[in-house]
Length: 578
Image (tube, rainbow, N blue to C red; front, side):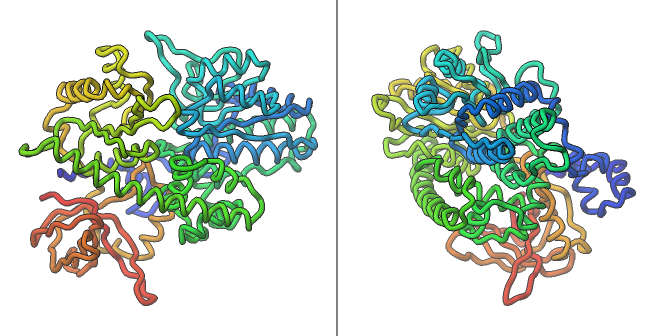
């Protein structure tokens, strides 16, 4: 591993300090591209106006007309955390805005990962029509559902697509659903500045536009308009859990959601999820959303029915929310057990691929008949992190009549664009990929089992062409040394209250330290006593069992460890340069 230091432009650091930002925060912010305090202003007034998002005004008119006519609206969701929070946001928002009009004719449908697959298919459109809906609204999906939208329109449904994914491209031409309203910052011609907004964020902007439209129609005066800002905790959860880039717009949404969570303004479902995760809403952080609440919702979509998650987030009954949260927690424990078994099995398969060689192959492609398709993505991510290679993990399809198909999920490393690799495989080996999609660091595909070896060889060939020794060296970007004066519990609390995440990385410091003592705990964690700038500090490296030399360069995060009522600074080791 090579530990590098993010550059923090001195002029930006100085400008932020002069504006009153704490010196350590100024350094961290500057290293992440922040130049002015305006970029740190998280007030709602600084959100981009909804009319700047192409299609939002048309969507507002469509929904306002539907409410006025008493039409039935059905929300079609995706089965991940972003889709669940977007669906709950839509359900709550439409009922909240429709209440002054006496409108509450809103339902939802979430496809089954195994039986239905992803997105608005013709079959899903038919189910929406059969359920008696008049208007179909997608959340976190739909931009690539050309056939599904066409079928919905043929059935007489009005269609509103709200999505944030990239549209499909065929022979160099963007393919968009026709004869419908589309709200997606990544559609051609949309001038909305934030291209990284999650699906739940797109739906929130549609609701902002709808409120303005209803206000203009006289549904309510401005001083009595419904407070849809109460939906921001859901927006924050979906944004963090979907691992979208936390640009300034997304950081504002997350910061505002966290403020309301900490103030106790959150729906019963979130309260219940915090409870089962043993986290305290009053001290909520982005880490809690991404690593405690998000996985419990995602587990339902992977192994069971995401309807459980949507019901948990949309109910106003605390007792029902608590019961659903318990179910989600149990499913997540099952997911962890299943993932652990699959990870060990996949690691054994991977190690067999380079038996006798010093390093793994340039890319990994793994399949076992016992793998579960609901967790192949998580296992691929774990193997990618451990072996630092682009990794695809396949499982046999569980859909009736498609037992011969394999569903794969891939995770990548910097320098290897996974979706572009799949596109190149499709061009070089026509017919091997039945379906594929994704982006640079994560992608998915479906192949016939008979083509697994061809896919493996094609992926290996592209990896050999694109990756060199420098690219295959694991790198950890850190923030340089930590001054002893900043090694304080109160400053750790300050850091944890900030919004960190994808594209705005949590602080990681690095420097050489003396290893005073080390011992293995729990058979797989290294507990450390370190000498940092002359002082003894506790440290722990989770998931690492190999001993460290007496002096070593470590990358570490700051943590406040509590023992017998006392809080002490602890270093959470992320890596070592050996």
